[in-house]
Image (tube, rainbow, N blue to C red; front, side):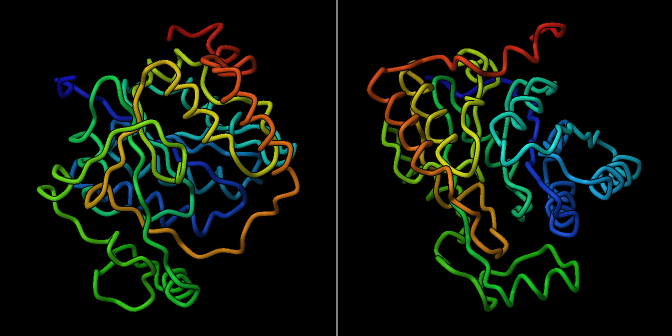
Length: 272
């Protein structure tokens, strides 16, 4: 596998009714040393406040900041991401959650580490409740390695050299998180995107990874690069986790490669 010669990166940010937090995420994305070719906000049914925020950023930005909205019918992150990825113009997709702050070299690192035949799983730095509260008051997006309120602080260390030395490739599913993940768009289309049968929090990202791996697209764990900071929030309700666990196990046992309910429906009238 060789490094890619040219990557046009689309950044997809999922959100639901959290415009104050989303604003920080978008501003950190716009402050990148190497910006994405576009930012797409994948909105799982927010009220008009989010649309107004996205439009304001789009009007002030040199790159497109677009809004892909779906009706609020419960937690449907899989469908939300599919709609945004279908609309993406880039050949490489980076996905984050709307409660993530990005290191200024986040996009540069994802592009630098991208390899054909792989997808990237990045890590996260957990910000405390107090650190998050202060940021929401001050609107500060920069993060110091030495400031208070950083959990798993080692994940905040950026070193391109160490990142190259410690990158790991494999098939493991532990620690799969779509809050910091990237992949080639063509690979996403190959497995028919995220499985929209997953409703409610949890496991839709792991099941997506299962199908990529079953297609021979290996996971690459990236450390010391592609740093993202997770703003504190209350944990999501997990009423659907048992059902979603069952769907994940079915994908593993059945060695599935394509979602039966995926991104293809959004591509009917759009060239992929």
